[in-house]
Image 1 (cartoon, rainbow, N blue to C red):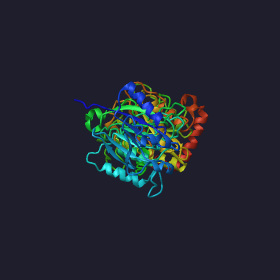
Image 2 (image 1 turned 60 degrees about the horizontal axis):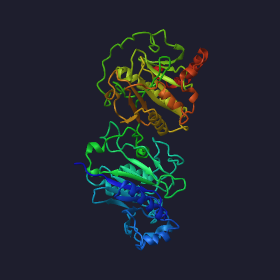
Image 3 (image 1 turned 180 degrees about the vertical axis):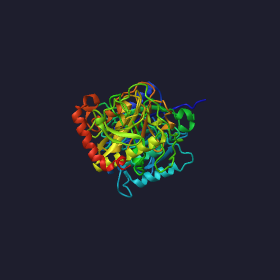
Image 4 (image 1 turned 60 degrees about the vertical axis):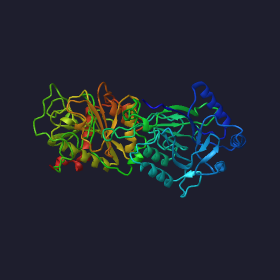
Length: 537
């Protein structure tokens, strides 16, 4: 028999408006039935608390529901907390303490952190420091079989909580909030995280607590910021929900992923120490447009050092399949616009993109006819890798990084597109966030995959897919199961968040006259010559 859920209320900054809060709680309970507890985040007391508080402190009035509050966020309200380690403030009103874990008889686990972030050590009694957060994490993460907590209560928002998510309105989540709270939330994996202080209501889309295809699925987290009690803008300050303690739930039910789940917003800070690089990537376009993908160790490729690098068994050298009709990209085909070719190797060649997003938007293409990276023979993959390395060095010499992507969908011939982005214009993290956010807007499940994974394990030959690689080694993958926007990769890079060239999202609007294309190709060929390994072969 399934455990009965607990009915919980959470509220934002009370700031001493106890009558307004408890009047609202009574109204909710008279309409919806009794709740088990009320959790208050933000500032429970304010500068005008004294009169109302005296009635509750002396027992003249009583909170209608067991109420748990966080500590002071400023020195002015410190006097309301006689014991900073936690105590009963009045009948039915309990101060949880500076930091810790509250476990009721129901099994519900509530982690809490009082105060605002401080750089001082030790932190003032109304603040928390990095040491406080580290000690709280250590005490909980050392618990055998720790999977997370049911609820996390903090007063500040976590920094960057809006990454990959729905808009937070007037709150800039990249500047607002505490990085220490972000770190705490990333480690404790709360099913619900409540915060306040910003006088705003924001319910973020749920986010994952595991890396897809790399870690066992885990429960999702939900972040809810609540406004101040009785605010004149009528922003939501009281939130009702039901929850079964994690310890009593069926494991399969616990880890179910809702359809609107997003990537973890804190993964950037969690990965900053490990800026490893990984090869990869992809995206492409309709027949007349060139899209680029750099799959460093993707497919069946064997690196030039002769090591397998974890890839599947390389294919034996063999002739590539022949196209069923005219092909725009087989180098021997009369259809190829050879004035765009800027380098020719043994198995691959490099060409400027027709109607490129930028003048130095280039493509790596196999000379023979291959449909996707997963179809390539080992020697072709090896030369693709050489071109990727040469292009990375070339673009870095010009203060740029490239984005790699492949779309194996509605295409005959593999087109690996390379689009450079100025280093000082946006970070790799900005690029990844833009891809994921715009994918979510179009209901595309673009997942982050392990940096050293082999795409052949995810997409057997013939499988439609979209694949992105960032210069940090982070990779994104989407298994195409229905329709897919042909210009998606280009549209993301052309968007206002990255290159801000929306007018160039469609290559057909960017095509130049043949003499201009030829001149651009000559200029690129001249600049690229010192990096072109094919000229030294």
